[in-house]
Amino acid sequence: MTPPTDRKLLTPEEYRQAQESPEFVELRRRFRSFAVPMTVAFLAWYLLYVLLSTYAHDFMATKVFGNVNIGILLGLAQFVTTFLITQLYVRHAGRSTDPVADEMRNRLESHQYATPNREETPRG
Image (cartoon, rainbow, N blue to C red; front, side, top):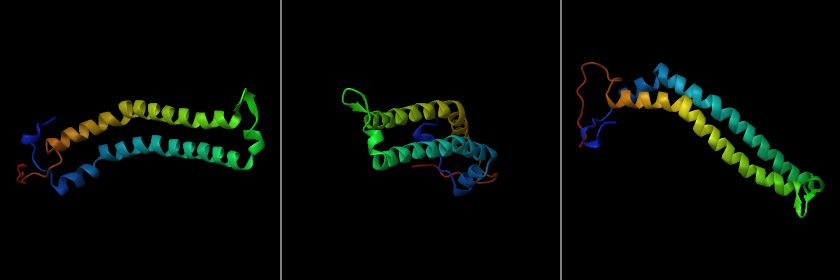
């Protein structure tokens, strides 16, 4: 990574070129292929929990052992699911999106998206 004092400002054109690059299109595709299905799945799971809590009170009050009922277990499962999704995303990002994003950042910092014949403005 370039030290902050040696960096040059990026132009709007460089950002546009990076955004229109095949790498960025692939980066968005990889991110969305994980984020959209996982978001839909979690929201459906959460909605199921809310609906069961609201309309299936007897089912949710069914004792499993001691004073622990199905509602408590499903509620705790919401937290477990959140941590599981986070872990899955970290693994997905490390394998799928971070390498592409790191490469794009390096190309941006070295002005490889710059058009030829442009003067770079030093930061400072």
